[in-house]
Length: 407
Picture 1 (cartoon, helix red, strand yellow):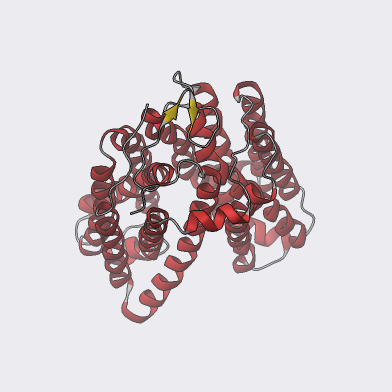
Picture 2 (tube, rainbow, N blue to C red):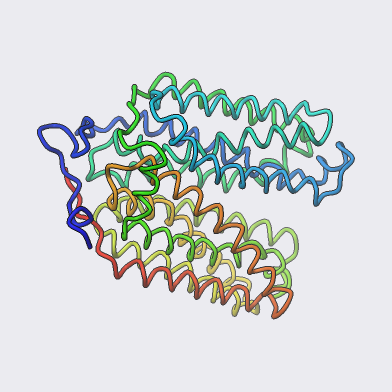
């Protein structure tokens, strides 16, 4: 480990080691919450098509598989924009940029709602991908400036709570309201939520200067950090492991557990509530014992996935495994954001983009490998593989010593 990597996050004369103003000692929690609202609006819009595919496909005269590509294209664009936006827009006030990105989500949702044809819908989803990637890539950096270093985990929990709540709400909300209002009206509602996010950010977010280390050179320097490389590798392992199983949770629950559609809906709700619980607990725990949290939650994730594969004969235990699975996965965004922020505190914008890109790639890789295993060896094998992969990532990560907190 280099001397730079072993240096703690420090405040020198009221300024960070990078020369930027150090984070305020009294946290701007309303501003942090506004980021959580923005994340909620973006993630809700990202996953709404999942519950509306049949209606979208029928209305636009395309197949359900083609309609589903609107989710895939959003993730791909988000991975790219997460890396590029901090690099290509290195000087703009981050408050203004976050508001612009949230406004882009408003435009995207309205274009989807009134799309006369599939190409228009796809173009609108590209805009949403840009907004998601850019917003996520900057969220860690901005949160770190809004809260004291010792409260970074709690701050990230508040932001990531938007993801957890959106994960729980998006699919059932889309299903319910799509039946009552129609799919286009649901996207008008999503646009309204994004407008609310814009308003809250405009009222609460202070001016946030861009970090001094933007640009492609900084991105390369960040990747050369041993801590960053290890952390991103373990993020890829855990993310791919999770999605190798979760992508196929429906056939697993119905095939192994024999659940009917109503029971499956209840299982997914329990899983979603587990995500919320894991996220809420992860932040304060990461502030106190990051290495411990880095081991506990990924192990919980892996063991729950393996347990899910073996507990098909007991519906009650299957629900318990789903809750623990959700809790383990729900903690990961906060844990990794805290790790990465400590590893390179002077390059948080580059870190945010890398984390966004790696996670989106892990989603695609996990789904691909899981599909191969499901087709070749069965869904149980995919779940066990995913669980073991996540646990391997936990073991690797916990062997690396994070930086101590400052402030």
